[in-house]
Length: 141
Image (cartoon, rainbow, N blue to C red; front, side):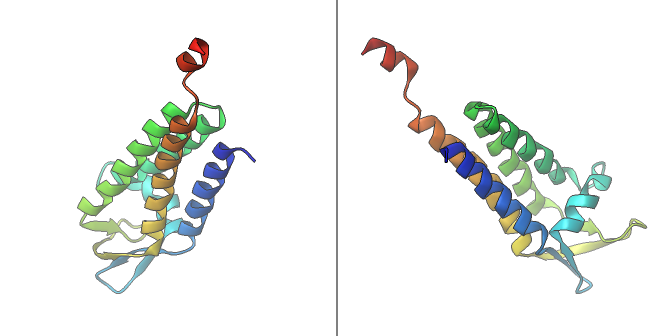
């Protein structure tokens, strides 16, 4: 199996696991699971939900890795890490369809696995770039 496929499988697997775990705990002793945040996070893009954009950025990173563009995959992986880390600056989260908000009290394993999925793509793409033989060196020899 190719290195790029292994990196991709690990990143996607970690992402899928993150969906099944609590990602955010709120002041009302409620927990929000990763799947709920993934499905509903886009609805708060005009408010505090800008960090949700790490999801489509990560998706494009996966796509660029599949089409053998590790430089773009690495850049998008780094961008997804930065956008996902931005979630730490958000103080409250929409907790239901009516738009009610609650303060974020802590982050759960789902959040950290989501972040790990982004980091896996970034680090894995960098490793692929480093392990690729330089075309100029190959031509000179």
